[in-house]
Amino acid sequence: MITFSFTVARPTIIVKADGVLPSGITVLTGQSGSGKSTFIKSIAGLVKPSTGIIRYDETTWVDRDRKVWVPAQERQVGYMPQGNIVFPHMSVEKNITYSNRGTPKTCDELLVRLGLEKYRHTKAGRLSGGEQQRVALGRALYSKPTVLLLDEPLSALDWNLRKQVRQELMDIIREWDVPCLWVTHDESDVAAVGDRHWICEAGIIRTGCICKHT
Image (cartoon, rainbow, N blue to C red):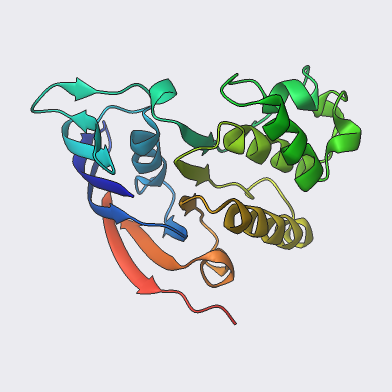
């Protein structure tokens, strides 16, 4: 469980967040520029908050008053960034194991579960968009993370492929039973995958409803 209460001062916005990220899938929506990516990067350890704390269970990751700062590589966070998400010149296997914080067995399991085993030695740049998304998810899960952070994981896909990959991602996340924060601009993701819905409005993270799947 992630507990947080912090602010991040950016040139164009101040992001303020106070809450708890529990198990299951939490979907965070908001307009472009509202602070979603800044929030998720703060949890990942890629942005340092200006004030406040971030804790994982009893371990303090950030405490600005006490000058505590645990860097990203020591938080065991699985992070799937927005945009160009694979190293195209590297094989699928090398993409997944890039962090070097997992085991060969875990890599083998992910390749099979993600339907990528036959592409193990294929350069990731040769794969389709949906396959590249699976590679990126595999890399995020490889270290058996304490929390999974997905920043617009489907934004580069067309609508039909979005639905397919969204279901695949959701099934894998629930199978691996890892708390997940799923950032998206697509409101349809809320009902499709979320256990709860948070909204980012002008830098303020607001908790919302419990989502009911049909």
